[in-house]
Length: 146
Image 1 (cartoon, rainbow, N blue to C red):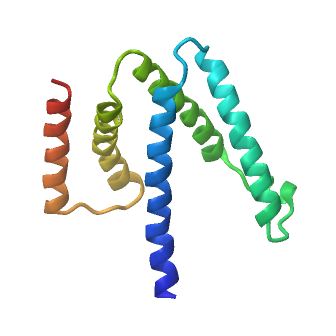
Image 2: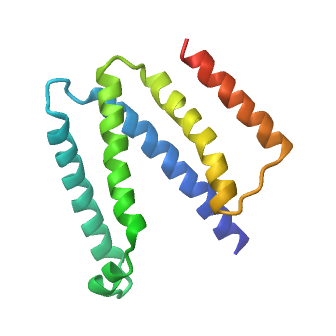
């Protein structure tokens, strides 16, 4: 069981890393003359097709309607936030942000903002080493912005 847990833990991070690399290269390579909303529509249609096919292949006998009934406000808000992330990066790259800096700058700010949220709403703990990391993030954001 430990082997499966480790595989899921590190395998999921590997998927995030590879997908994020592909994501930023694709965002930076999106034609500058396409309407950003058309770009997002095509992106989401592609994602929808992939999700539908994956659901059909891996549904394990779950009823689609029963699964949809399990959704809550967080899933709708996630959809709204994804549109904001996609649109934000597309516009950031079009406005001249470097691929090597935009995500690092945004992610550093996000990490700093997520800390009090994690502490207040998700009972997360913070250590002295974490505080040192936070300070490094703040300094890094300042240096990247120069």
